[in-house]
View 1 (tube, each protein chain N blue to C red):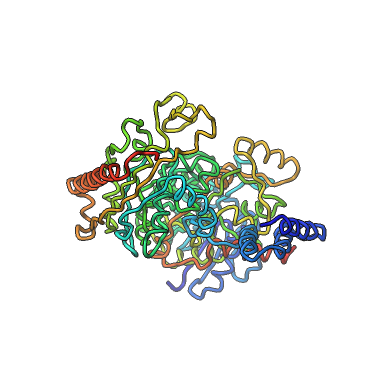
View 2: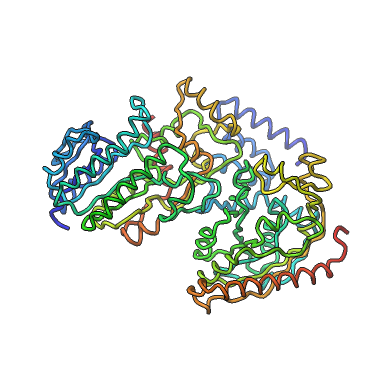
Length: 309
Length: 319
């Protein structure tokens, strides 16, 4: 947008406000001075100001997701240079449970998995992901998260989403995964008690193991200050090369190189929903998924080479 | 089904009056009685109005005389009005329920009790599942006075139901209702010039349209189900979007200052919010309504967004 159009826009906006129009109407009037694509974006923002947009019952807001896409696209293409393998293995329709390794306090890996599917899958779909609970205590993070498809990590949420035939991403490592020190990176933690397998069995959803390489270098955790964590109510308080040294800037993730590999789905429907009670089977399947992700992590680490260049 | 005799407690409330009117038109309902200290808000043709205070042991004599087979308990106060203290609200809710149940013991014809309870029992929690199911009432600690009231009421009804297997008790857990003419916390909140919100929080709110609220009560009277049933419109709506649909503006306030700013606003004549409502504004709440659809057999017709739009449209027309 050159400065002449910007000035024309501001003039009309001011004229509109002076003549007693409400802000949204005044912006629409100002927008007539703009080129077509800028006008369309602006009109969408105006519609949002009047509540004219949709959210589904989970609070997922597809239009908001599209509006913030350029930011994540920058991270995807330029910052982390994400390479994707096997996106076509994710079922194109119906329910499925994506199961990935997890690192870092903010769920960047979840957003990159979403973007990988939107870009590389022949029939793109927005996955929903289960986010560590305490993100929902935080201002802005909580509302941003739900708008792009995050939900509280509760088995009830996962079940309901799968029953509605959504694609759901879970990180069974949970807090143990996000809190591991840099020296332990890419070594998978215990997969809880296999709750994700129970959910898959109950709903008959196939499990798609996902290996994410790169996410475990973005916040290299060198030490932990448990007493600070207790003070602010976080599960842990990481010390990284930039945090808390640089203050809020320390939240900027390091530009590591990423690879995301989707593995072959593990079918669960044939076991039947009652199999969810079978502890042996649940733990066995959980271990199988964990093992596959671990192998894929090692393979992709070799393929990627050095972490940052 | 035919020849039902129904008593409504709290018939002087908006929903109570409309319910009486709705049941009067129902050919299967032979007799409607309404109990309250205030008269009904609409003109009723054949409702027998009983002026009595539900806290008064006198109702132990008045209710059996009506020989009803169904009682709809509607007298649960959700927020104390201007002339009601919080302890008085607790009295109406808890002591009122106790007196009512004591009176029920003396009604041999009684077969059905339907309670218009509240989904407030679940609270509003950041870590809650997005949709509470009926069995999740105990998932989180009870934090507010109203929540404890509702839990106590439910407890009394459960005990009563256990001891009287012949009477089916339906506990309807309502999300906040909205609709033309209805004055509740939510409509008062949306009628303010600006709506205070927690900065950085945009919780999911779920409401029920007044029409659906009534029809769900009628459906529960016709087809009583034992235990708790959630009542809400399909879908949820972000608080920010709800305020915009109502044609209002949000006033974001940093969380630590919210209480101070809203109580200052109260001095200036703005509306005050109960503790429950404040938590709702911060964390929101959704409930699962499958039991209402599958077992009671009623599917709410108005989504939360539609209910807000209908209300806002009517409020604008009235202004």
